[in-house]
Length: 407
Image: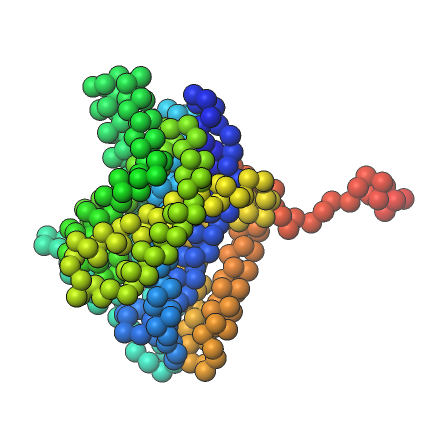
């Protein structure tokens, strides 16, 4: 996918910093899942022999903004693609490249986790631990419990993203019918301008806040859906983030305007995140704690966008490559992270050493498999829309050297 921002009308200019942002957000996801076994008192698929409250704080901070950031970028690029291809082709493309992988990759990306956990528990001489959704979730009335057996796990993001795409396209069609194309475009641009303004962070944070209030708790932040059925609370927050990105694309230069305010956004993000961590959720009024959390999530999102747009203006082939590989890595990282984590779980090694090993092994396996089996194949075209030449492809001999060998 081409990462760009409107300049005049529908013209676009690539923003290379967003390659780095997407690759970094993916890396944070791997770090987050690698940290889960070290969280004291938090149900997870397995527990490590060591734990640390610092791991808990780190996970909480990452969870504040990471998926909101992903959804914002998805909305930004989604509007760009729609205006290039029109609504029908855009929806078909999203269903093919997002909806279908959520189903096709489920056996290897999700079902395999149970096998890995079972083998790990047998090798450790322990009973498999209860999955976190089974331990913490209550099945809604009328929802068959069998749906929990086919939980989307980390692929929930794809299901929610498809929901956001379909809802946005329907709302856009209604707006075009009632208001006309020109008026709808002007309104979208004005909303984008408001969001990019210094106080726009408050407007962006409203759906996040509404989600937390509907949940009735801020513990754990935005709770992802445990089944493929739509979750009204999660959809509220993430559809809001998707629409923020959508409207930012409608306003020319919006990301560069956000970039000018990155110092203030970053300072506010740190202060708010500390406040969320220091104030106990159970002893703080829900409205106050939810407001702090929503603003923290969005100040982090805008600060990171601003930093990348402001300082990473030159193309980096490495970051472009990692951004291209991020979708494949997202799909398949969790079974690998769990397998490596289980292999290290009973060793009395420092947590940082275990994290470094888990991250390195996971990254090598994911990037290696991406380059060998995805990047230049039909799978790469399916997931990323294009085939790209392999980075590790063997070099062909030059014609001169080839002729010498023949002679």
